[in-house]
Length: 348
Image 1: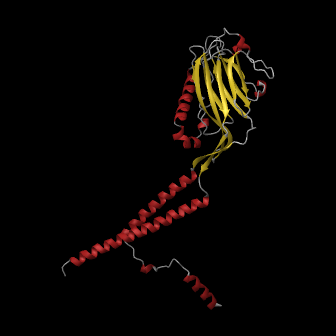
Image 2 (image 1 turned 90 degrees about the vertical axis):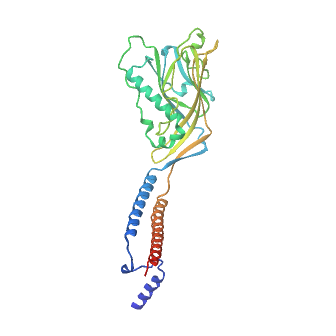
Image 3 (image 1 turned 180 degrees about the vertical axis):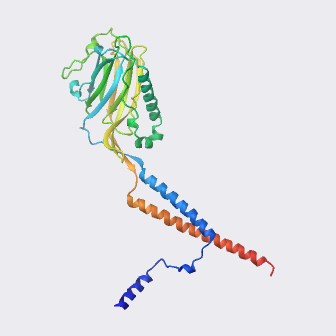
């Protein structure tokens, strides 16, 4: 029985690819100790860097066809127009010819267009930040998606200084439910008549009326809020010095966020704007013309599996250990070669 166990042990010893050396046969040197310390410093540094990269992966963007063509999309708005609510109407018209009533109704609130000091500071900060992020989006997109940008700013602070004049503006805020087709959300002169199949603003017959359509946008987004989304229109402010027709063209892109920071479906949009004087017989107002992209963006973590992470760590440790060992052996060989030649030149 013992002979059989010895034969088994000897068989596995023959398969050992890592032959061992007795400690008395090992030679230690000061140079080898110095190189070993440097080696450990490099290994620890690289391991820490790899762990940081694994815990903070980048983001990657995929484009896929949008198959969810029948889903409903929420439009969230909060903006102020410098005309009393009694002279304005806000509604949606799209290619389905659906009645404006079915999209929902926004809340109307009489207010003052001019902001007090605290409100102006808040809005200017929102405008500067949003404009900077929009301009530098391609450079900062990975940092933006990992940040809490969506929660940088809360709502508009309550007014402290009450003006000594009548309220001269109308604040629209709330949510509308849109079809996923091209449409037109607008604020124009005159109230909307809730007649199914017909789109009429009463003010259109009042040709002599010229309101002030200066406006300020605090919130304008499609779909539920999500971290990392930059809403280009938030912080927009236009001052009407003459009767103008404001037009915004929006391209809405469905977006799936599947990262370790957020998992939800939402919408992003890009915008172009144009303002021109109102022509004779034309309705003054603010028009947001939107359309939905046929492609959907999917945002994912650009990380790796845990098994691959362990393989990378093992390769770093083994690679550095072997490389430093070869380097140390080469230095010792050259040193001994130089030393032997020097000694051979000494007089005997």
